[in-house]
Length: 273
Length: 149
Image (cartoon, rainbow over all chains, first blue to last red; front, side, top):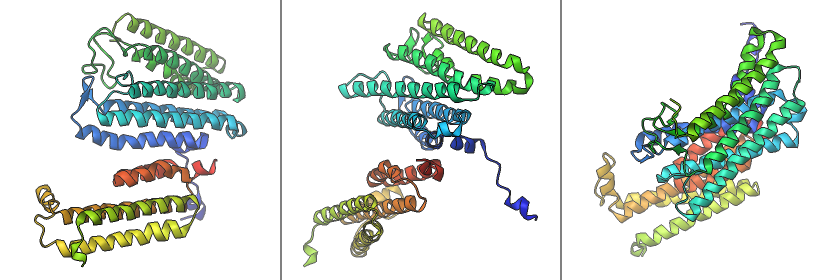
């Protein structure tokens, strides 16, 4: 076997790029994915039910969504020049994101293990305090993510539509996700009318099919942070270069309208489907 | 004269010894002392606890009912306070040994000691869950994560 082939370094995987972008965020995201394994085992062993579904559905959902959030930010930080990424500001955002995510998932899993609600639980002063702290944690996630997005818009390569989509997607996605989340947390629950159960909801997501569900708009708003860069990346060869930026802006407007529309739908007590 | 000793007294002694071992482990990690961490917490105390276990089993195994073949047999085994004590000492010895191994593994991989902060209390309280937490953390926190500090 020729030595130069044997010595060739392996091609970096998608995960390697996340570690390159922001090692702490990649590690925390990876940890969330690994935590899925014991959570799924607990899910299989546990017959206890909350809101009509297994107590472990909620930790599973948050492990998946926090992993996606953290890995997305880690990947998109590759849009920043290396010296900006190494600065204290960027590292501070990463530490805040990792700490808030670990706090959220730890409490959500702890409460699931006890068979109790985490969000909207104000049954005891401690549960109420923890629910407030979860709000602080969620706000930390939004602010630190928006911070990263602003850095990408400021310091990233302005001519590259993918970098523009990454920055805009993180900022807009977290603002819309944050606003819909804050409104939702100021209600007594995420349901508006309809049956107060996750059973019989939209597959995987559990969104109500009998009444409004504020989680729908939260989902569409937040995931603009993936949708915009993915769209820009798909368009990189398929769409004329001068149209790529307008396409990203158009999609951002469309996404905002979808978020607002699904929010209005839920507020009026109407299911998505 | 040792025959007068009650299982309850030995239980307290074993707990005290294990707790001392965990404290020594914590201090050993904090001050980076191989003597405290590897020799005392990782070897000496688990060896002493294992000696106690071996002695308890040698003396009381034959008079206890039950066995390892079914959960009901294990339950019968643990109805003997001496076998229950032996089982507890088994936990204490192996949990501490695993805790010291985790700390050594972290050091050998050049991992940040801060990562041990949630892992070792978990190993102390819920042995295998702490071991699992460490395996997860060492998989996720590749060396470059610590080096980026």
